Length: 129
Image (cartoon, rainbow, N blue to C red; front, side, top):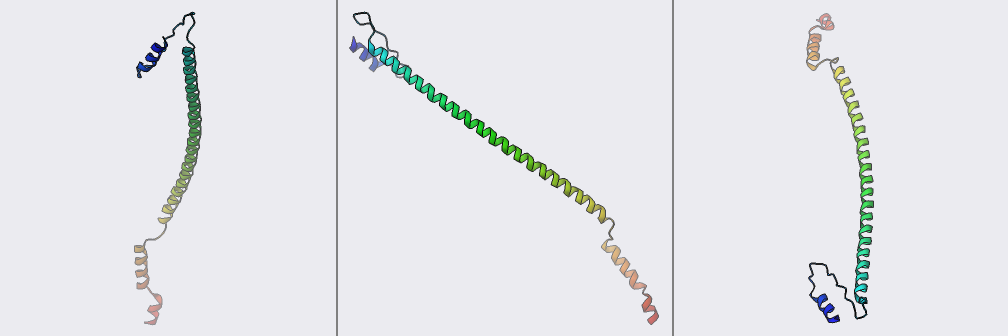
């Protein structure tokens, strides 16, 4: 009987989980090896589940930290954009002021015409001649 269990353990399909069959001994009880093996598998599964739970908690913690970092960076970028908008508004106001003041100044051509007219009419040169 033990040889049969040993052969089953060797020949089991590696792609399907091995399910040990419970055999009764002569007194009607189960073999202790089957229970020990089942207990080991249960412990292994519990350990895997605990490891997966720990990994999941770490991933969740990292996700929360990453989200907080990204939110902080977004807030910083929004502040920078607001400052840039204010600076741009100030520059636009300055350019409007300068452009309105430029129309009040004389052009170079106008100054040349005035200087020619001043040269043509020189009252001091008239007295000397």
